Length: 137
Image (cartoon, rainbow, N blue to C red; front, side, top):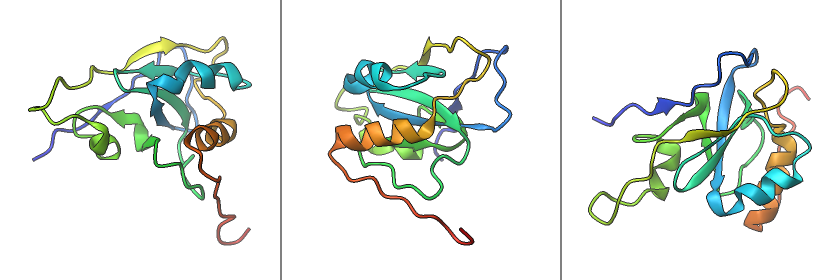
C-alpha cells in the first residue's frame, strides 16, 4: 500500500476560493521562472522541484511538458504518483526533503497565473504548447 501524499498547506491568511493544485518544475529553473512571471503566488520547494500554487483544474485542456509534475489538490511528497518517476529509489540515495514555503505573495491570493507558467514551462522544456478548447467551446 502506498503512502498518502501530503498536501501543501497554504498560509492561513491566504484565500484559495478556487481550490488549488501545484505545478512542480525542476529546481534549476525556479529562479529564472520567478523572474519572468507577471505575478508569483505561493511557491514551495523541495530538493528536486519548485512547486507553484495554481487554481484547481489548471491541467484541464492543456498538456504540461514532461519535465513538469502536476499535483492535483497540491498533494506532493512520498507516494505522489505524478512525481514518482522523478524520485531516486531508496537504495540509490537519499529521498528528497519535504517541500517548504519559499515565497508568499504580497496580496491575499496564493495563485501564480497558470497560463504564463505553462508557457514558461514549455519553453524551458523545449516543447510546443498544446491545449484544447474542450467540448462546448
